Amino acid sequence: MHTVKRIYLIVIIFTVFIGCKSKTDEVRERGVAAIKIFLNENLPNEDSSFFRLDSVNLIKIDTLTAKDEMDIPMKWAARLVIYYTTLAKSSTSLAKSKMEIADLGTSIYGNKEISKAELDEVKEESKRARAYIDSANLYQRILETLQSQQKDADNIKLKLYCFRLLVQYTKKDMTYWKDIMNIPVTLDYHVMPTKQISEDYFKSLH
Image 1 (tube, one colour):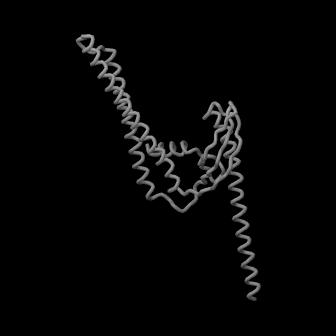
Image 2 (cartoon, helix red, strand yellow):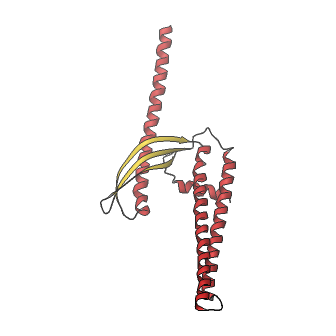
């Protein structure tokens, strides 16, 4: 009797193991196939020198819950805060430099006042700086909102796969580009670019 139970248990374990292995193989094969199609369609738009996709080698597959997924737009928002803050500092510095140059010109050439054209340049650069600051503040607020929402996000149910791959392609000049890419894929094997995921989250907050 004990022997029968033991055999039955072994059969159950073996069946579960085979089932898990089959699902893992399916995720790997269908996910990588979808990614290859996506890269072939999109890399030419990202890099005009793209000629041929050479290889897509899987490194690992991570599973993401809703809580994990929110890291994607949060990182994107954080990068945008840095980006627009840097642009704001650059425009502010440029506006200041233009004003200093205009002041110097009046002292050298004996002009009574700064020309309208010079003032317009300074005003335009200052306007750009304010717009960049507004954008940086917007994405900072978005980041803080996402951080708050993530605390209550589901951390159990599988929502996405994230494929980590080593991708290589040939350029038109016959040189090679190679890098590691992290590409999210839905449970029904559609590629979801991180930019699209982030923009969808941003829109949902308006």
